[in-house]
Amino acid sequence: MGKIKVKQVRSKINCPQTQKLTLESLGLRKLGQVVEHDATPAILGMVNKVKHLVSVEEIN
Image (cartoon, rainbow, N blue to C red; front, side, top):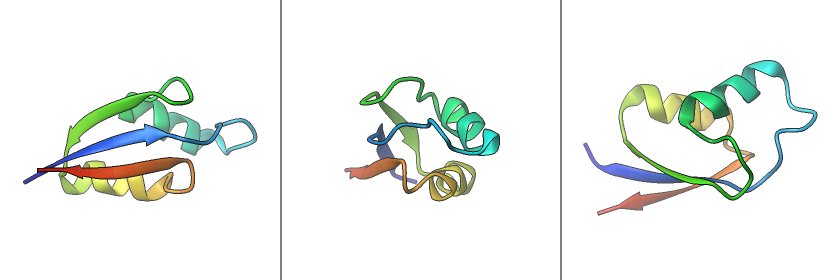
């Protein structure tokens, strides 16, 4: 499995509570914050749920 870098690029204001909790579970609490995760199916599913709020970059 590779690694991915996830950055929050849009605000979570006016998002459903489930999306806010998903961002928090990914470790994103502030706009512009960047976190690294292993590209597991669970993490990729969470990223897919909030794909309109984050940008994703693959790390080699």
